[in-house]
Length: 263
Image (tube, rainbow, N blue to C red; front, side, top):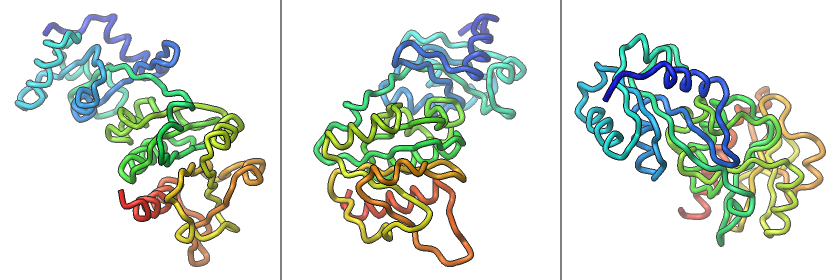
């Protein structure tokens, strides 16, 4: 397990700024041993990993480094200073790695007998995107679709926020018009969460194939979307509160679906 060459350090820095794409395949920057453990458990190929020397005093982390090396990954032992230059976070955890994963197609994410698809449109905060993916997987959602200016679900911030869910949940990127058309063709009911004016979400039947559309922070869903979906839903709340964080709102609705589906 040698130290990291300059070319590898540069690769990590560049990946933190601009995720690398190879067609639908993506290179993922995984910060922290937890995400590396999750990547291996999810069957993803970890190509490279760097471990701060002190992190290897943890037997589980040392075993991880040895397993990755045995599987053919480039494994480096580095100083704290070098790791800080490779990691995008201010206080690195001591472990960082690179894995690969492919984006799904719309056809793939809509497959199955009882889909529950979450569509994030213009959700720009990567922390929100990661948190929604985590909640979606926990509540039994079958896929996640991002459109417009939604933050990259495979960016390092969203990956950290998802706590590993982005490594397992089928994820696709598509424009909103094409997504709505695909939902209609697949006979998946489309439901848009809006701040006010919709039916109370706990009065909606989520036991059928459903796609939940979420709008971005502040602006919400564009007006052109509302007439194209099957139902509008809202979360009842006492005045003067008018809206909730998109991640909180998504969690409330998804767990109502979880309750109804008995997952």
